[in-house]
Amino acid sequence: MKPHFAMLAAYNAWCNRRLYDAAATLSDEEYRADRGAFFKSLHGTLNHILVADRIWMRRFTGEGEAPNRLDAILYDGFDDLRAAREAEDARIVRYLDAVSEETLAGRFRYRTIVNPADVEQPLAPALTHFFNHQTHHRGQAHCLLTGFRRDAPSFDLVLFQRETRMGLS
Image 1 (tube, rainbow, N blue to C red):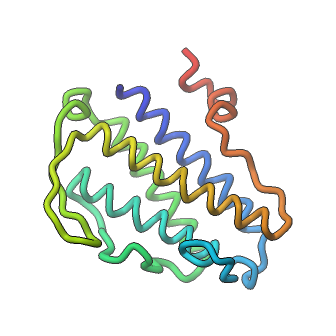
Image 2 (image 1 turned 60 degrees about the vertical axis):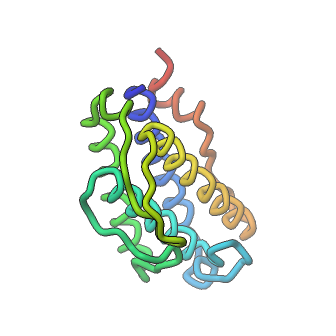
C-alpha cells in the first residue's frame, strides 16, 4: 500500500508543477476572473487546493497550519502561492515516504470544519480521498485554463507513470 500512496504523492507534485506552469501564462486579469467555478477563479481554485491539503496534512500529522475556511485565500500573489504549493507538495512526499505500512493500516481521529464533528476512520481511505480531492479540483482548474483558449497540460496518471516509471513495476 505504501508504494501506491508514495506514487500518488509524486504524481500530485508532478501535476501541480504542470498546472502552475500553465497558469503562469495567463494575465493577472484572466487568472483572477470569476469564471463561475465553485471557487470562482483559477486563483480561488488553486488557493482552495492548498487550503484543503493543509487541513488534511494537519489531520494526518498533527503539524502545520490548518485554515478554518475552505474558501480562504492564503496567498494573494501567484508567485507566493506557487512557492507555498511546491513546499506543501514536498511535505506530502516526505510524509508518504516516511509513513509505515502499520500506520497506513491504522485509524486516525480529526475534527471536521464545515459542520464540526469528531471523526475516526481508517487512514488509507482518507488518503485516497485526499488525493482524489486534489484531482477533482485540478480538473476544474484544467477546465478554467481551456476556457481561456489555452492549451492545458495532460494530468493523465499513465503519462506520469511512463515519464517517471513509478507504478509500472
